[in-house]
Length: 497
Image 1 (cartoon, rainbow, N blue to C red):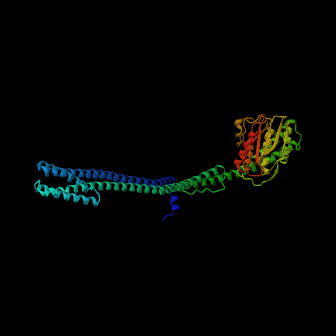
Image 2: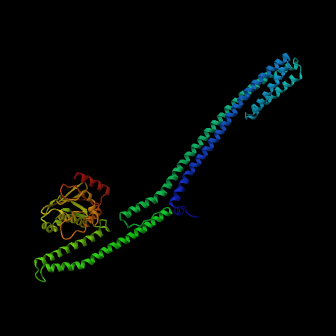
Image 3: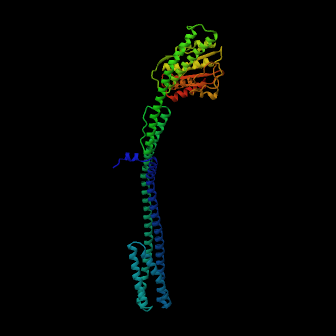
């Protein structure tokens, strides 16, 4: 026999929804049907009780009137002896018989039936005396003494009929209260059961959908390390298996991409080294003296080889930034010392363009990955020196707010248009404004910097500036911080700035 779990997994999501809908509506349908049948029976019984009550009261009242009329006709006949009075008596007697027949058909109890039979017997005996004796005989006079007793019996029947109707009304009220109580208890039992069923099927349906949502989010975020497993209906479990196949395929493609980038980068280094060595030999005039044009060509070859080396290094960094997001080595870092080291490395490039680097450092310390921060600031400073105007300045500021520190680098170049503030972080995007030079950049520097900032649980953004470009790196002082908190504080700092 199949277990409930295997039965659950053999269903599709549509079958599960239909099954849940059926099981939830079944108790409600049962309760509604029971209520309708109970109300219908109660209505029929009430209608019948009202009809019986009306007939009982009318028949018993008619009975009293008929007995009174019979007594009047009998006494008039005893005095006058007129045959017409006897005919009127007989006609009224037929009405009395019809009233008795209606009362016999009603369920008024044994007491009423006994009174009716006694009344019928005594009236029959008196009628036989009136028919068989002379109107002024002693037997007729004795027969007349029966009619007051008949009147008492008729009034007793009327009173007992009224009481019987009252008892029937009370019984109907009790039955109605019982039906109401039964329906109330039924609803009290069924509503929690329906809610429980609805909750169970909601969980059964929502859980695999939630698993799919988290799995798709993980794929979108580039987290391929965890297998995707969806437990639930057959079609959703199959979809989860296909997503896991997609995850494995993406991992394979990512590995192939990294392998390709590293291989091609390694293969490019050998001829690049030869080119640089040859350019250095020519520039040093080891193989002979060079004229001015030849020296310029050697310098161009040397500069382009350096630029090509930087492009290859950017390519390697980009592949690493997309495959190694978590911070691996986190230790205290003095930003002043790191920034001073980077300024020293870029001193020659700045001097060649007549650019002065101005520092406004506040002695901040951050617990993070030094190499990733160095790569971020190196790209920002390199871009600032390239894009700022010749014989201008590049400013570097540090500061803090709350549990975060920031580094801002400002130049005096053409700036970044608002429409390009996010696009400059896209891979290979270079924008419309480019620095003057022999070789264009790769367009990967800011993309790598943004990826590293995310890996450090920080943010890299373009800020408003009156002149030139202003880029800001924000980092949590004590390492990884909650993203929501970091984002909120960063926005607050950006507004304050």
